[in-house]
Image: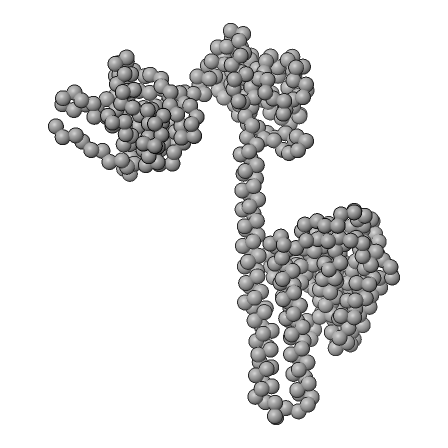
Length: 498
């Protein structure tokens, strides 16, 4: 009779019902090749697919022996078909498993075995627990010392009877643990959960489980606690250290959030480049084309006016590019905070000089009210950027003949700096948008000056890197005051990363 050939492929018509069982199913040819397996069986051995499992039977001799036809023929000779037997298996990662199997051979008309159909159940943990309970009843706790988990024998009222020795990381005075209550060993929230789980395990006869964390000197450690009945009013508490897994999950969550932020940064960056940078460049091109074509017909005042507009656009674009560069460096972690003792009064005087032309064009009085010699501990370049952005904004939204003031006072252990104007003010609806990183908010100034809204976001980043806070007060038609604080910090550090 011709041998039936079974394709090495996971069937697609089996549906989900088979895989819903906790038992695994596998068909093994008489040459030791698995030709069908349910998802439960495949995952039990640590594989992702049947193809991967088959490949390992060929590459790993020890693993391949688990499917050996000689193994099954010997078990068939020792047992009646359909009678369960136990056998040792090995997973992909080398870990040993104990499986209970029920197998039925399929033979041809000559009585030759074509394949074995097997139902398997993982009884590894079950056998270990049975052994633990048997040893406890016999008064022999030696098996506890051979297991990697932290295992404790507890009474219903939470008293330690015995325990595994390898738990120095949790308990310092381990030799005094017997007879103590879990409430003297674990923090109150954890001990409360342990007591609840002990009662639930004893009352239900099932396995209770929860996770908790403990703070060590160096890091947070995470544990999974399992509770199983071991006798009359006695339970096993099995602790498994899952710190590596939890820290990995935390890192993944952190990286996911960072990627999300970087993606948002990219979107903002391209939004600014596509709109706000294109607008001034188009303005420059327009004036350049106008001057090129109409130069002979323009009088001196018109040329002067156009040249002045070109200069203003160029300065605005330069400020925008500077802000974009600083902002992108912060978002990508490439900007560093260099704190040092600095004279903030000299910085504000420098800003008054830098913005004098812009203020003069609108006949605005720009005044620094910072007392000479006022010293703060901060990054001078970042402080300069904060103040020039805030003062520039104030000039932008102040009418001709107005006033802008820069102040600094010491208050509640912080330096409280402010930039105030008597300009057009900001509505309550718009105030909430100013420092929202999800919104790029900008309006034109009193002289139709363009902006991006990026300057205030940059200020917020810089202030918060210093450990301060920034906020705004405004009344429509009366003016606006931007406030921010810098902690009065006497640290000796010279460099810390943003």
